[in-house]
Amino acid sequence: MASQGDMVERLRPVVEAHCGRRQAPVRFRPAAWRPWLEPHGVAHVLGLGAMDATSTSDDRAISRDDLAVARQALGDDPEGLRDLFVAVMIWGAGIANGRGPRYTSVALGDARLPHVLEATCSAVRVGELTRAYTEFSLRGVGRSFFTKWFATVDDRDAECERALILDDRVFRSLNALGWSSKEAAGTRRWPARYAAYVGAMHEWAGCLGVTAAWLEWLMFDLNGHVKAR
Image (tube, rainbow, N blue to C red; front, side):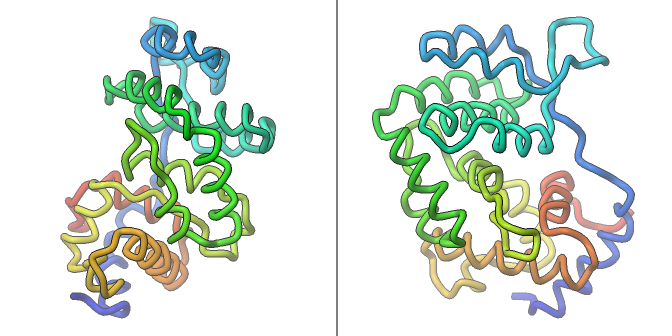
């Protein structure tokens, strides 16, 4: 496995080649989500974000900044956390993941939802990412989405090792650069591997003069195609 120093040098040309790029808002289709959200009383979340000026339909666009604003506005009561969770699922699915509305409905129908959202939100905000990963268990929600939840609810200062998103696209890029979460964590257990990933990303980002959240997005966007262009 590549060492931390090796990874910084492997990432450097990739970061320099893409340093001017930024994550765009995600487009979603309210009409596709409404039938799945209305039975749970959360269709009002579809008003988040803004109308998509590039679309001729009623598509809207929601950004990572919109999620941060929603986190502050919705608060930490059970309904606020539920609404924020729905917003995260919408942002994560966009229009590319047609199963997103159905899986979100399944999660909303899971009786564990209020406890899981509150418990994992609390764990993330005190930096206990391994515990948060261990405790998140909802029908229809896998790692790619519940780590989006972690990244959204983490309201700690930028100096902290804030939670990051981890999905297969990020892994493809890191693996292509020679990094292994299993070797970094020294175990096959996913909660520990997630914590090792977050720590490593923050260390690399600090060495490269970028934010860990931006580096995470770049790894996602490149999806394994990490040669500097």
